[in-house]
Image (tube, rainbow, N blue to C red; front, side):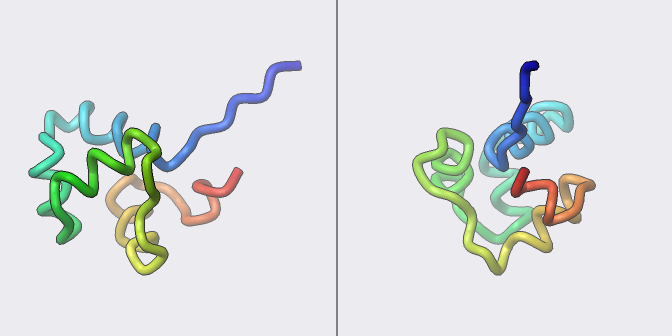
Amino acid sequence: MTVCKITISDRIKDYRKQNHLSQSDFGEMLGVSPQAVYKWEKEICYPDITLLPDLAGTLGCMIDDFFG
């Protein structure tokens, strides 16, 4: 059985591309730098826990969805 795990980075990248947003545009929506979005997408680091409600709302999911 194959288990698929969707990570925060995948959700961010997919949402951003589907909505034709640059990393800068997406970062501006959340009040962070484009460099932060780049690092999230590359799994270099993860968003601050205080951003999770805003991220979930923007991505149209529940916070629990980030922690499969």
